[in-house]
Length: 137
Image 1 (spheres, rainbow, N blue to C red):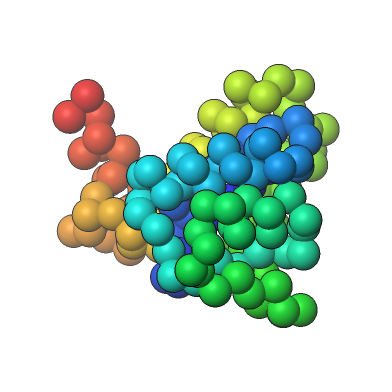
Image 2: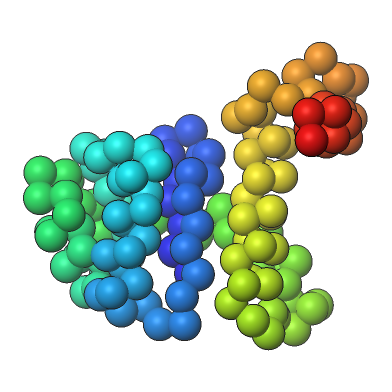
């Protein structure tokens, strides 16, 4: 699984793959760049596949792999891991993708990254946001 998180902590893209190889990394960054543009700085772990994809697709971007730089991304999906542990994981890639994207969406709602449920009482933001979405759908 790859996750792209911006400087505000908003999850901007998620990619699920059976392997963390060069093909998966290139596909992830291609999709993220297509949806959000080219970043000037990318923070990842020290995966060779990620380094190769970044060098290929983002030659001018700063690639930060220092020891604690990736902590925000790792901490961000700690809640997801806690949610999936009692479920004993997910069986299919499609199911995993849907659950992970939904989890990221709810996290972004709670953090106030969308203009949904902004006028709701504290503690009711997510419920109000889903009510607003239901009216549109």
